[in-house]
Length: 177
Image (spheres, rainbow, N blue to C red):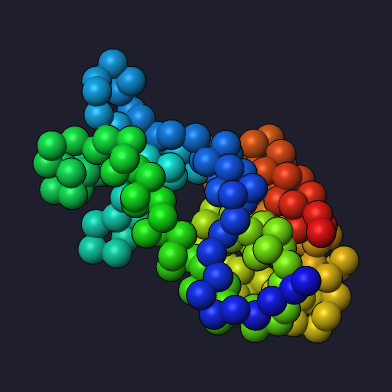
């Protein structure tokens, strides 16, 4: 049964989907802590896909390596652990969950909510907010909204196979009762 509960959380299948596609970012697996790594879109990330920023600007590419390492050391002076990564993911998802409730004030099943959460965690709430997917969902066209997931498979102007697979998995979850 779809619900509009304001305190919604991404369910276990959604969390598993996010973790499986984000992967555990670790720039140096030889150390006991999780260090920043460049994601396929060229953003410095750590943990379960948490983008590192400096003054609100996402750190990208080789030129921002020193800034990414400095931000990481500032946030986790003893190094990031798996427990830190899990807690950070939950913190990041709390923002996503609140955003989805705000942007999509329509009844959603738990799986629809989780699929939207995975998408928004990856593309950002601003992108979701201005999307045709959201417009169709608000208009009551759930099937049309589901068909929009595959459109979000580009990063840096090119189609990434991992994003194609992720969007297919998100769409399948969205359509699962």
